[in-house]
Amino acid sequence: MNSFKTERTKVKRIPDRGHYDKKTIYPIIDEALYCHVGINHNGNPVVIPTIHTRQDNTLYIHGSAASRLLKSIPGENNICVTITLLDGIVLARAAFHHSLNYRSVVIFGKGDIVDDPQEKWDALKIVSDHLIPGRWEDARQPNQKELDATTVISISLEEASAKVRTGPPGDEDEDYALPIWAGVLPLALTKGELVPDPVLSESIDIPDYLR
Ligand SMILES: Cc1cc2nc3c(=O)[nH]c(=O)nc-3n(C[C@H](O)[C@H](O)[C@H](O)COP(=O)(O)OP(=O)(O)OC[C@H]3O[C@@H](n4cnc5c(N)ncnc54)[C@H](O)[C@@H]3O)c2cc1C
Image (tube, rainbow, N blue to C red; front, side, top):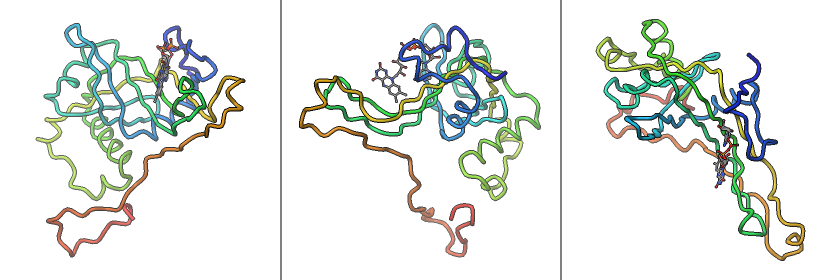
């Protein structure tokens, strides 16, 4: 499938910002470290942030088998996952036209528990690789008790949209002459300095994948 466009993923508000192709949607999913999953829980909407990862056409989320989100999703055939990357604050001359530059994705789908032990293992590995490539091989890997306490959910990517805003503010024609600074304050998530665990042995070097 080359387009994730459906009646309900069609961006109606500022449709020029809508995209439905893998080339736009997958890099947004892959750059984000977490998503928000919206479910209908006993008649109430609930939106929960959680880590995700993608392999081919499947989105994976995981968590404690006891978590409400993970317990609720398999019974739901209509969940909504959103992913947002913030790129900047757009400062217009008019207060009304202030905005954000962003890349966001909305996915509709059905969540299924991953029962197959190999798929579950692989999903947990790619979740780890998504956060810090190389960490899975270095870390102690999950034992059976930890695997049993973890639920992995797969969501097949079939219905999705991206919405992307880039560029300068859009002001009213008559406002461009106003003596007010306008433009974009770029924002980005950056890596900071490593903070070793206070009880870490001094004999343990920082691994290459963290340098
Ligand atoms: C960081 C951020 C901040 C925002 N701030 C505001 C704000 O302050 N006020 C405001 O009105 N809007 C804001 N937006 C845009 C907002 O997400 C909606 O697109 C907009 O409010 C229109 O909503 P709607 O349900 O009427 O859209 P519609 O166009 O009717 O939605 C139809 C379909 O389009 C798709 N779609 C809609 N929005 C998005 C999206 N953002 N990403 C991917 N797919 C989408 C979905 O599949 C949805 O079902 C913001 C977006 C982001 C990412």
